[in-house]
Image: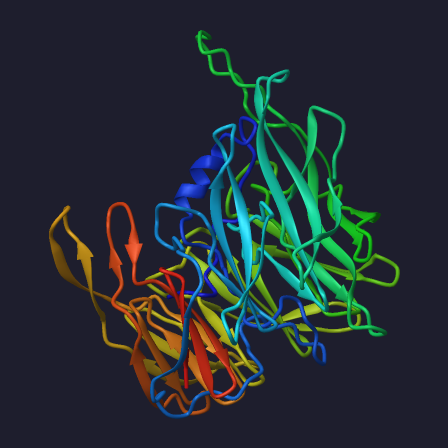
Length: 491
């Protein structure tokens, strides 16, 4: 199933985060996630989470070369535990455990990818509904932690949001920045973490996150005859900078002219420059009508250039001197934008409306390599577009997905739907997952289908989903972890 899918990233805090419990149900099985690779890494100016730097499997796998269990995973539609992540030879799984106050904590467990040995398990409360719960750098893991509690003085639910660093070998906390401010304000992280990697030691020396201060909103009086304004007050929107070694706050890139729309923001760091897509809006709307695409010099933290775009930009990828992202002008109207980045600014090379009939949460499936953008079209079409011009180079059409769905408590009926693709590029193979349990390998140059393998049959019911899996390419093979926590290595 989908490893690059994007969850609803806008947990806008209304009524003191009461909606958070609803979000965790609505985004079940999301996000992402498993980013191929280890987050915002940099190679020759490229920061591309859709590419895995391995040799692809050119012929159909002979079978399962190794198999082991981890823990039961709920990747269906009745829980927001978060999909497993494969990072630097370790698998991280996420599960809920009950707390004494009736709420739940998120626990993270690390497993050796090759052997299945359990390395450690700790309570993290990592935000698993985001694109990437964990970020890996050297011996460290970084993440945003969010704990929902009830403040009796305010009569409101409030969130304790922290940025945390763990020891990758033991799971021990190295540092934790609570980002705490005076009540009733608390810090809300409105983006994922972007890491700056030191050239001297290869470790993350600075972390960046879009955030703001949000005032908790007291619960309304149940006897009141009118509904009060529940819009929370916010202040200090901007990009917060933390020291990767000790978590201390190093600075703040103020964004006074921008209003974070529905709690959203996108960051991408290529080493010298931090790119940001920030919505501009006076209302809590998604997508915003306008956004700013901004580049910051990381030596001075000053703006290098700033461009205005229609809608919101998401899923930022930098491929050499080109910036690629999905732009949503309306929820049902996404576009692919490719921009040429120069010393004095950026110019749009081309844009193309995405006519896919299926959108995974707010994520439109695409993948990028040195020459092409691979994009899902409508009715099972997969196309390769020239990265520099947008010209269509080839297209391939998949047959409808044949699967089954629970039609009542004891009845299963067959269904035909067009694929909801997940695309992953490697050095020589384009992997396609069709959303129904099939993995296919295509030649990225010609679009020729090399092989396909059905891993599972997806079943979607009223209360749960079975047959989902997370896919991770390795050199000349791939790993699959299924809903029951079993891991298979295909060679």
